[in-house]
Length: 477
Image 1 (cartoon, helix red, strand yellow):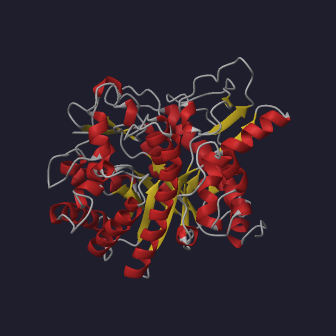
Image 2 (cartoon, rainbow, N blue to C red):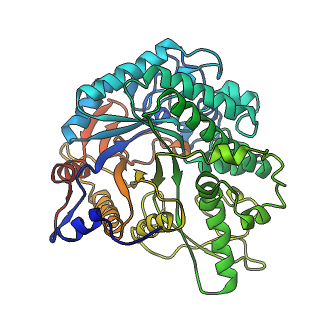
Image 3 (cartoon, helix red, strand yellow):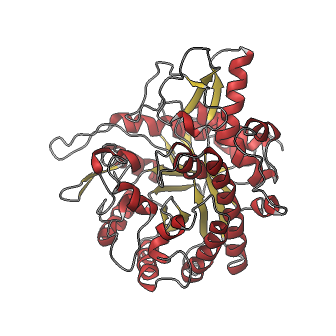
């Protein structure tokens, strides 16, 4: 695959001052159903694993739940109007599996499908292209009770859900994302247990990862069969991974974490194989007997694009005898077979999630995917930051978030200039929302949400992003 500058990148390099993006670059924002919808008992919706998890004492900070969240289920017309005022060209939303298929099998729930029909129509009426993610972590509890993602049958159930959803919405929606961040679903949900459903079994986590990707492949085929003109992809949360030093031990630590964070998903999806070194690293956990003949051919079904979520970089080091790995926001048990690898903090600026801010890592990640894997369009499907926000005189001046977006969009521009086929960017997130196990204590939104009154206040970053969209680029620094 060539890394020579494309006509697109040549045009960018000739623009001079500022950072102009290619014509047709997709500017959007993203959300997820459980984080914003609320109305968990309305319209025939059943419980998801996140309903169960959030209502289990001790699982979520302060016992917060998504029962109400941003009340988007009732307020979507105003939220779509707000998107239009910001000039969004696309909106990445997720549909809630338990709202569409409450029992995890059988015919679709018409009340749930009608809600997404109304939402989609509202978006289209305002000139906003819907990008639908089929799975953003809200597995129906009925399927979890039957074994969840470690159970192979869940992949087949997911494909059936995809098929009926596309049958209902495919006349309105062209862009489909099968899964959001399967690493989180598998390794946080079934490995460390810090996310729903809260299981802590490394073998189950690896099986879940495979069955998630098998479900992706089956769903991709179902969507393509139903709608040959559909654009279908998957979203992976990818990281630049660096060794702390040039030592052999640190280099091996980086190899291990890169394998578990990135290559365990990239290789099956884009190469049709698991990395041999990752299989070896996981030998104490699993013999990969759950991978059946023909699975990887399904997993690697050709896609229209790859979605990339990028937030930070991992810097890692070799284990030190007698020294426990320092606490890390993603628990050590999220890394089966490599639990003793140390995650290193470097003293650089961090977000309110304590994630290091590393925009150059985004360039590194994009260029790596373009260099090492089959050439296909790329989209940043999430990128954003949590900071402590305050309302002062009716305004929210989130200068840190604005600076984060600016730095990462300049990184996107640099990647495009180097020949990376990056086609769009979805800011995370449109709204402050329910931040999973952190409840309502972390704010990622460009729009401030007062959770008591449900008042929306566009922050400085929202007004800035609207200007970026209007000019299709960034002003000169």
